[in-house]
Every structure is written in C-alpha cells, then in structure tokens.
Image (cartoon, rainbow, N blue to C red; front, top):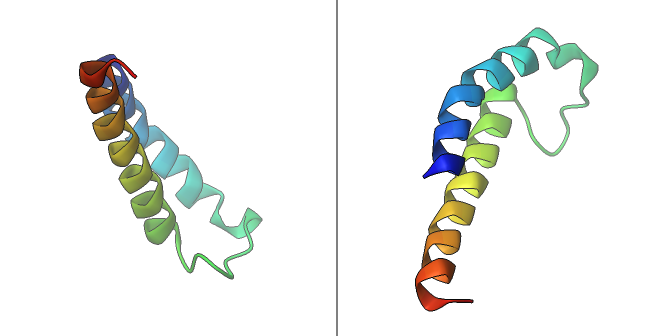
Length: 59
C-alpha cells in the first residue's frame, strides 16, 4: 500500500526531527517524544486498517 510505504520511509525522519526539536514543545499531556511517536504511528496504523476495510466494503 502506498500510504504504508510513505509512512515507513518518513517516520524515521520525522522522529529525528521531533527529537532534535523536543525543547520547542510543551510536554504536558504527552510526556515524551517516544510517546508522541507511538501515538502517531498507532493512529496511522488504525487509519490504514480502516481505509483497507472501507475499500473492500466500498464505503
């Protein structure tokens, strides 16, 4: 799937940028860069699963 390929190619770059700029964020609700990365990747994976199902169900 094109979306997953794009995520795989860019997630390490985005993760590095987040870590490099972590002091520019307010870490209140999300406590760390690693937690933010996990939340983002989980959301993207949920989207992809639903997207694949939506295509099969033609919705």
